Length: 319
Image (cartoon, rainbow, N blue to C red; front, top):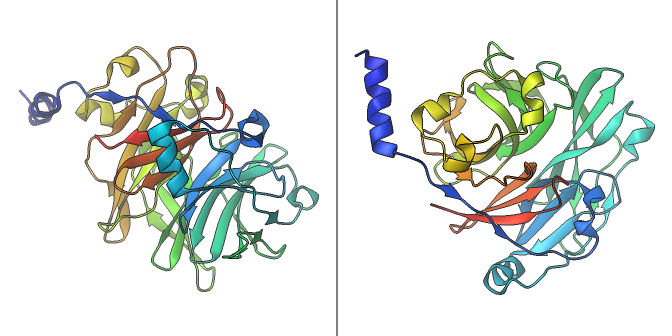
């Protein structure tokens, strides 16, 4: 038996059949339940969960952490606050502007990615501003805008995630499959002078739609998602993760993929940590487009969909 087959056999014996986890719904009320809000990213500001709507409506959504924890215990619906977002009307000077994609806070500074489709060309941007710690109003000046060319051209794919590491912010391009890119990297932008460099990243099939913050061990998690309708344009190679960690029951019977994967920093690159993914039990009727992810202390994760199949805010406990 070859050494590779022996290694895989040992791994299958060690891990067996992976268990899937069903998310716990956090009921919401108010405007946020309208699918047209299209939540596209999550992050924490102080003790407030910030939910970013894709469409420019002049506001963000915020929910206090204490209220989220209470709702997990008593299932009380939450109506998020709507602090103002003062930003330019990007549709007036970015051709094909489509919306906001990701959000990250660093102290009282805020960073947001934007997506545009100019004719047939996908364009990604980083915008930045500040948040008032009292009113929670966010202001983004018109001149605070940096365009970053995408590594390749895939329809509707730009920068879906942001991560702050030391004095740099990393923008994660959505797709980095083996059949799409020979070598994979992500942009990192200096928070001091906004100079741009690159950091090595592993090949990974399907999409990365959001990432959590770094923990004390320089590790973080990402949403790894596949809507079956994207298979043709993503042209995925055989998934190396399922060669190591067995698929859960619902994943075995579906082309959809909904899971969380852990990454880590190793010197000057990002790599997979080797930890078993957290597989979300699939819905037989509809694939859920998870677009937001944050850690909820040591309890687990909060995840959010955009509008497919509806607006969902959910909790996923650690295994």
